Length: 175
Image (cartoon, rainbow, N blue to C red; front, side, top):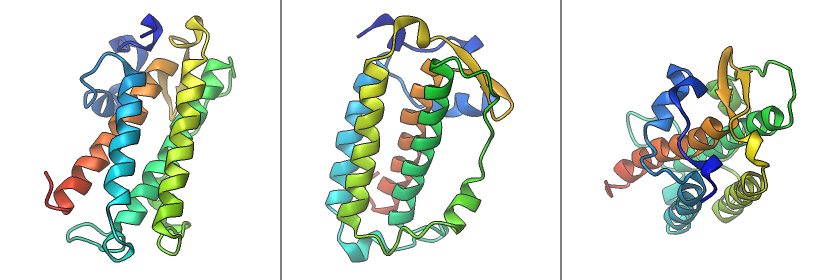
């Protein structure tokens, strides 16, 4: 593990993303990303189309929508990491996950295609993070009004996925 892919310090992020970072107990974020890739693809590839469309009370999103949300957020967090790593001085905006969901149509997408999309996005982020220069990992920018490092964003990607996959496991009675 490159030392730069280790846990971010408390000065590298603020409270909101810290909740996701806290869900990642490992020090090696790249190994955690790979494990998430395997676990999430396995879970969703085992579902039927019908199961993927179920909305378990009290949740309002189908399981397909949850996976689509994970993909959307990984793209946003990954873009933030990319921009900060490349010294983009612009403050990066926040986003409204519910607005994104209201303008997406994940349910009509075949589940296998949605899982492939998730897999491609995750693999692209793994390649990006693996090839970062050492100094980029600790570079800090501003996203959603708060400072955050590239390294912290890598941990946010993993923690956000874990948060939702725990809910998915509970919804499927596999907790």
